[in-house]
Amino acid sequence: MIGWDFSALEGRLHADEPWWNFEEDCRSALSSAHVVADLGTGGGERLRALLKEVDWSGKQVTATEGWDPNIPVAREALAAWDVEVHRYESERDQRMPFADNSLDLIMSRHESIDVAEASRTLSPGGRLLTQQVDGHDAEEIHEWFGEPYEYPHVSSQQYVEAFEAAGLRVDVVDDWRGTMEFKDVTALVTYLALVPWDAPGFSVDEQKEKLAVLDANRPIQVTQRRFRIYGTKI
Image (cartoon, rainbow, N blue to C red; front, side, top):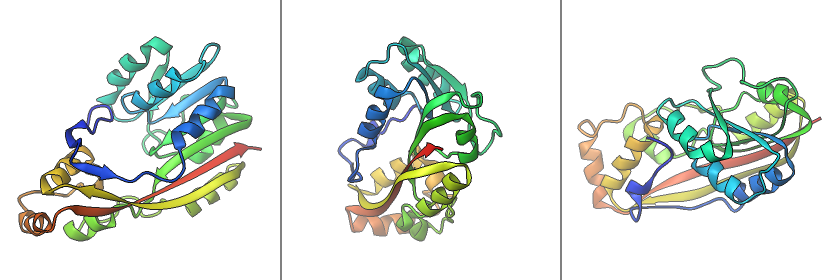
């Protein structure tokens, strides 16, 4: 995966969206924030779209990305907004590349967060907005291919506890379940190639009998699980 590009699945994958609008919530928060960080910016596509729709003059916007191939892509995409892209990933790096009490807003869509670190970098009254993939997302993929859950602990309750322990007031928390539908087994395999962390041990050769069964019963449906949690530093 380079950037965050699922165009190879256009017309072959349909995915429901949560009832809330995370992008609109971020856009609203951006309008009143001055020093902003976008965690896990991918290829910068989402942040670029947000910045196109707000008055970003006078704002200092930075981003982080942990997947090395994405970093030059993000830097090029965000150059027009003078957004500095830092190499950072919460599971690898102990410290976020920001000073204490320096940020008004942190946004994170489907990126792991060290909540204590995020709280350290937020100024009092600063906000952390995140939408996350629940640790038991796509349960069918795990069942079909015998793949263990990589992050079974990730849940809205776990995040609520982390927010409160880090001195963040929980303002919003919601869970959601929806459906992702693949037109055929080729679309499913393409998806697993794009997001290998969903099934890191997956092999077409080893699973060809199961894949044939799935393809005979197309379309192929998988359960999505998402949650959002928004908080304010007290």
